[in-house]
Length: 226
Image 1 (cartoon, rainbow, N blue to C red):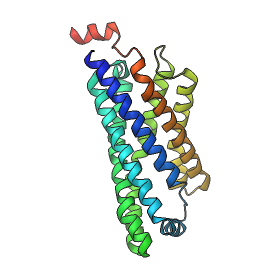
Image 2: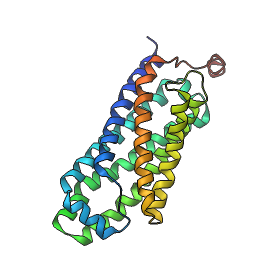
Image 3: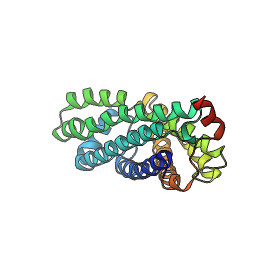
Image 4: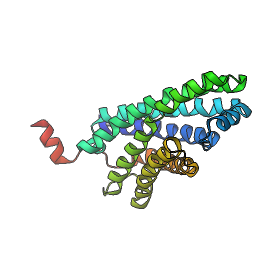
């Protein structure tokens, strides 16, 4: 078994697990209220669920980063172009950036809300909101990766599914911006629905990777050996 094929089998397995964990975290998380004080009350009313949601998300995002590193090291068709190689690199950085948000929300934010410490909640909520911007770039990375899959004849998922995932990635990006930056309530719902759709596709994609021809195109291999 080639190094590339082994890498894709491992990456696919971790991606599937990462997708399940992140999807579970998103379902438990729910939409974000643009009013900070109402959000504080919502977290206080279910601080345990909030913590579990974010620990699951932190684990899932960590495994997204692991997946990206394996894909980048494997030298497959998934990174044969500069755009897709960049997308996988952005996925790694964005996942690690957002993972710190999830840990902060599972610990300090949940604790502050449960104890009614408004000052601590507001300070750490601002920190978390800033770091969570990384998820927007995870979404764009998934959109680029899915769009590339839709254009290849050797994709791990059907073309229609890949295009839906690409649209979902863009939807998650703009949904987060609308909800968190501009306070538009429906933006958070768009972000949540789009993010769950992305996770379903990355799960399907991960499970399908070992069954696809993932070797580099011949002209790429020739160029790299020249």
